[in-house]
Image 1 (tube, rainbow, N blue to C red):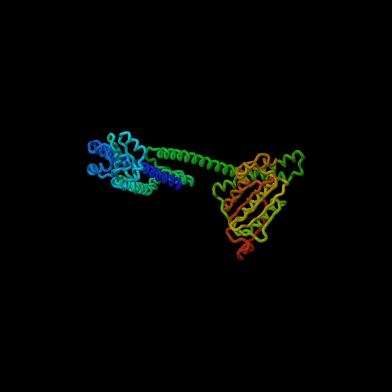
Image 2: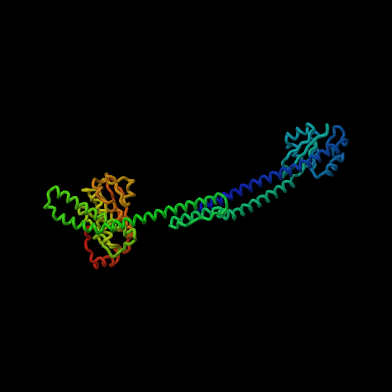
Length: 491
């Protein structure tokens, strides 16, 4: 938002600067033209009076500069205005007053000479000395060419003052614009800033955030549309929350209601399983299928009950000093003894919950055993400064890249490319493992291996010193009775 405010302020400042510059240039050009036109008009009237009133009858034919000086015309011309005088008789002996203007005669523009020779009144702006001058020339009949040299210093001085005033005014306008552009930009962007704050509040869970609707401009219409969107979003989320609560309540109620008849089924299945050897082959096969289905049903109901406790936020942690290496080795030995385990040389002690660690690692190992049967599995424990990682990598068929983000969703099943036995699972094991990992303050993520297979990485924060620290690292490990995790009970 600061970037937009800065760009808007710069745009306003640039607009003011361009406007002030255009006004200043236009004003200067207009005033300059008017001043020069006024000087040209005044000089033209003076030259016309000299030629038409004062000059006739005052000079003899073939007059020279001496005749002009003796005629009294220089004094009469001076009475009409203070101007330099150049009279060209065409004999290389002009009358020049003051004499410092003598070089000017040779520098007169050809256009001015042509106009004078044709009997017209002409003028030209020309540098004279250290300044500029207006030269107005004319001729009366066959008489000499007379040029009035009028100093343009007053005009140039006025224009200089005008330039200075316009520059000062422009600078003042830019400074005022600089001081106010930020305020204007902040005021213009206030509804957008409010929208950003309201969007952030909604992202944080405050669905009642709304924008004030002020005025009837485009920003007011935008604020009204934002509020309508927020109302629709709030209504949709509320409906989704109600539906989710109903679904969770339904799952919890169904799981709870199934517990009692399922307990009876488990007991009856155990009796049937104990007498399988006495049954006929056909009956024995049906009984085995029944026992297996009861076992899977029990696992499913237990998983649903566990998820319902997560949804109800009824799960409580029992943290204690845990030697993570011993836990990993014990879970692997119980769930997938064929897996290869790689542990650090020393103990890795963290504050955690042994039962939840067993659940996480056991579910991931079960996933590898079911979906990558017979494939090698490597389990690696890595200790870092701020966190520890347990990686379980298999060499199975893996999954498609687009399926990775969904592996921890409830009841999600990859298509049969994983394994033919995939249909026998509930699709809750990885979801439960991820819930336990989050409860421990860690994460569980899945990545595809370059040569096939999946790698699941459990990351846990380190809340106490790791090996190589003080004596407290290993003391709690010796004091606590750490038994090897046991496999999940079967019916």
